[in-house]
Image 1 (cartoon, rainbow, N blue to C red):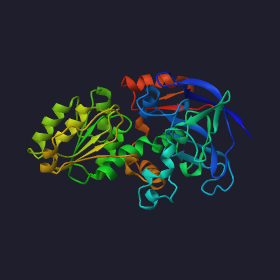
Image 2: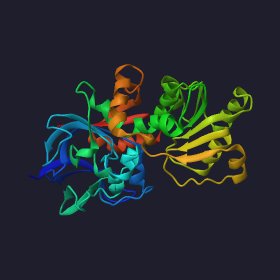
Image 3: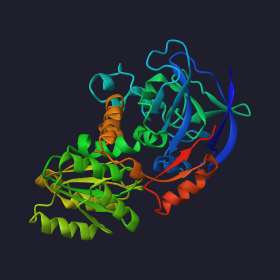
Image 4: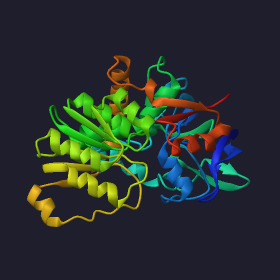
Length: 369
């Protein structure tokens, strides 16, 4: 049976998020309907709204979300009605080449993230006879959504929804950028560019991995102060100051890792990151933008520097989401401190304005029912 749900949609690039009552189809086989209670305001949704990233429009926003399974389609085996779940912005089917070789973050089922279309070529959201995609085939800026069961990760009922929502993208992306993709090890020096919702968790990952120096570069004073809460040992407003510090503190050997987690990627930050790592240094990029790698190949070869990208922090969501929540429960991972402000669905544009002005580490939409 079709139901009505309230959602934030974007009709075309450059237009603000619009609140509308839209239609939602019932779940098909291997699909479930989620009653969302919280959705994270990730920078990626803003990139979609601004037109910085490719997306089919119109789209229901949101790819970080937590809620309760409200209904299930036929043949669903992974979750039951009433389960508390986090939605992973990339599903993990467990069957494709990438899942079967330990790269669940690259699952083939993520191919429709930019269309919001299900594997059978259909959509579940509709408005006035028009199909609406759900960002990452989720659409967590809606009170309800129909998603693949492979996008659902059961969580303990005592985890608050606003905290749980963040481990669907920002937390594992940042954490994994340091721990998995970057491979930070004890005693190393790490430079993190950008201390927002992803960068703050890269800091936490580097700290947990045992890095001796966790250096953060961010122009916003509030974010630099919060970076210290998450484990940064030193913070700087600009890349040059950070570079000079790294040269001095490492006796000229430079950093082992540079993690790029800025909101908008550009040539300048890429160049700074490559320059700050020493011999066998690794630069890991987890950011969206038009930045290019313009660097002397001889310096990459001579220093054996490596530059790589990372999706989802190279995490396995089915394993790492519960693991990260376990670390939260033991006090080893700070998640409460990530949530700066909470908003109603109608305040979604205010939330992004606050993010872009540097007021938030992470804002969260709290859905009303």
